[in-house]
Image (tube, rainbow, N blue to C red; front, side, top):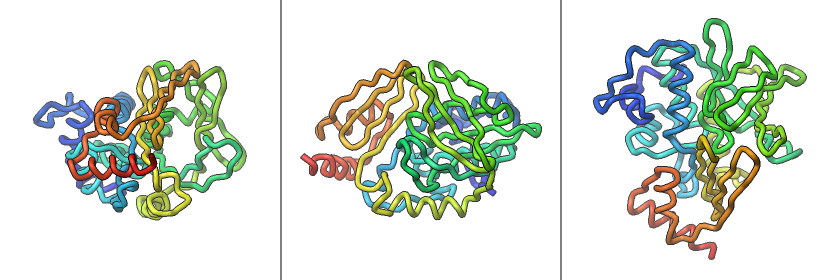
Length: 280
């Protein structure tokens, strides 16, 4: 399903900090809950969310080798289709049962948005777990149980819960600033890699897509969640505090390296700075 046999698992493990320099894994990786937690946590900590290729006018490829070249070898980040396709391939390679779902973003209040987010369901001993390495700075860092609807799960200073609605809809919510907030809703319908190709086309090229025409880079840090959208850098804390400032063009590349671990080629960096500066 996810072409896990094409993935260089050793290189992936090195990228997320779970393997030695020679790609040697930390002991035998079994398709169990302990391994799922370890891989998910390491992936979200190491690989940032970003859609810079969309801004630079490049197609976003979803073939496993293309994602591996970008996120693993070039040490870039990616958005949900890339992140979760890579995670799915790695988990499948380890031996997990992985299926996809399509989710509807609910972070914009009452606005009804299309299904454009990709998430994963991993089943272990008959129990489903929500896995998502691609929702950006508000996303979970670890898997969430789906067999116990409504249970609150602490991940560092952050709290999540999955609540059921009508027609089998499940909603991922997070608690910060003393209030529960919906992140996204997803149905039981299975999604396949080919479905993400279609959603990826919309997200990377449609004029109404939030990724078209603006810089978006995010990371779900353990203590604080950090995002750069356009020129605005925001650092969000579990108690609801938010620190926001504007980012100047001449500090952009250093900030991407410092905050998100992203280093662009000289050509891409120059183009990104030019785009950033063009709005002055």
